[in-house]
Image (cartoon, rainbow, N blue to C red):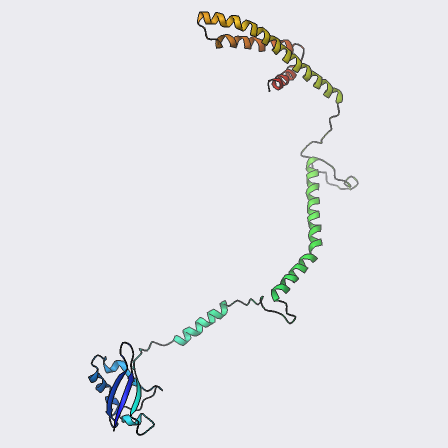
Length: 270
């Protein structure tokens, strides 16, 4: 009795077929298959098994593979052998799993409690309650710091803090780094200085106008003479201006102090 065997091969080989007698031993299947398909590799690199992964001994006949005695078709698998490693892959997996579990975060903020509130909301509410409880203490600390800062500033300016006069102490008070401030209330001096400044402004303005008129009259004559002689007009104007300023300054300085005149002249020029 003959049996047709279909071998489910691997790429690039298609499904292979072989017809043998039922008494053919299993160990002779691959040599017959390689004789029919010469492109197959050596027998040591391939493995023949059933779809269940088991195969009888090489000396058993082909008919013993099937549970039915009169089976005409058999299905076998032709797979390459896998090279084994040195081992230890399981221990590497366990070590990697331990590292992954140690790095895993325990963030449960997105979870909910028995009342349905998220844990992140509960934590924020607790933080807010603690902040509100500590608000008075923070305000007192800020007020004390501000008070201490003001007292230190008053000591540096030489101002005695309120309530410090009755306090008794053996140590001497720190020397002030700045003098005391005084209000200047001499109204007579202020009025006199204002009147002097106004009079100087008026005198300077009148003197400049008077000299400007004289200079304008003499400017025409000097310019005509300079043009006749070929002298530039700028050289004629400059001495006239200098003489005007000098004469006004001499007239004012005789009646008013020098510092007041200087400030008044600066204001008029501005």
